[in-house]
Image (cartoon, rainbow, N blue to C red; front, side, top):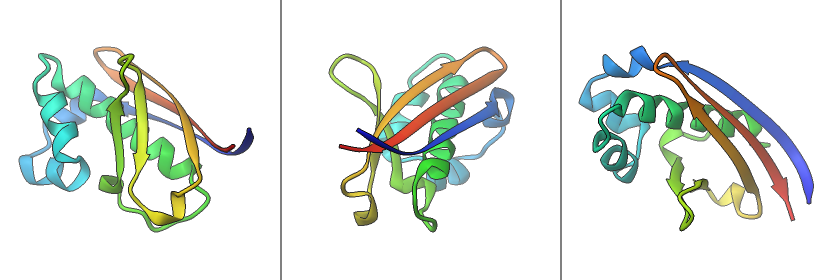
Length: 114
């Protein structure tokens, strides 16, 4: 494994309680919105995914990608995973850690190549 870069981000949860539907749809994929909005504490979920998108953006070795092209889902073990829908990211893999409290969400990402 060859590490390319790392990225980290922290977000305030309260910010995501105030965002409107159109703004959310510009940032998140339909699957991300469906998952997060089904949660009682949806703002914590959204802020954690946004922090993850920002951390991935910082870890990528190229610029010019829209946040909606970075998708945070869960694998079969319920762990977060990253999909980047951009051909420039074809051979890049990621490790991710997410955490949140009532007030803040944090994401840490390692971008690497096999």
